[in-house]
Length: 371
Image (cartoon, rainbow, N blue to C red; front, top):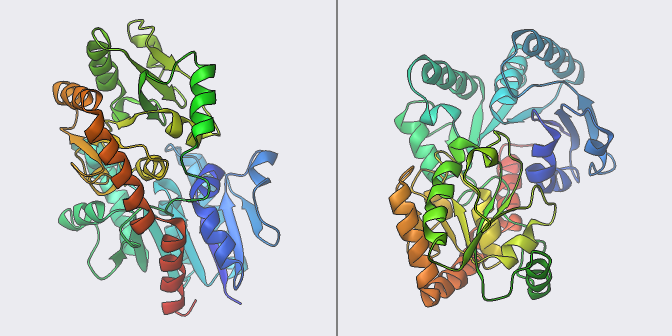
């Protein structure tokens, strides 16, 4: 029985994206999960028989703690003699691939889920890009979670055709179609709890509130639209950069904080907005689509895979408030077009992005390489 280690900085990554792989692989492999497991709640979703290791991997650069984490990883990988080390997220990828290379682990995989340096300039871009180059060089193979992102990495000479691949048509682990589906009950109940009737048009943002997610542009565009139209902007997620305190008061903006029941919000809304400056793929787009919710996103690599422009939603020029506003108005005004996008979105997800399909591709790749 092969010993496989999944390594990520945060247990949230494992719980949100990797459990379908873990549940399938544990049938024939000894599975180990390595992350910053500090909270007892982090262990709550770990299946029986899966071995967990605590290594404090910080997302942000901290020289001493990074060195300590690297030493811990080297000791752990050497002691356990894993047949495969598979890393996820940039920091965990860098430390895990260095450690696995030093320990001469035969199979070293990494999954790229977007590049921090894509929107940076100068020395910061150079050093962050070099980190990805090191990961790509040390890994024996790497997955990329969208076709357009892989092309971006090829053009920037981070990876090669031979060493990289995309599972199916993209995404990290696909969409659980049993969990993500439209619910009329959730729609009615949630709208009622927010004091909104069924006729009110709702734009939805779901995710972390950060500048590079395009939140300032979204606020500005919505503020202009809402002055003359009956609509609301519902926001679900953590305000990581205190952006809500920097915008003008608008009683048509409803902040709901973090929610575990995101399918209910997808069922309740009319359009998902993701005006991000960078995304590896945009899993939230296909999760929303599975619930019959079309999307409006920026025309960048990753999102251009998740949204089929003029078929399942619209793409706008990145960081362009006027174009974002125009397309928000277009979707608000043309309900027939919006309905068509909703139907197309759901069909496309079922055909291309189901969790079963992506997991099957993932496991098949492992088997092809005798794991």
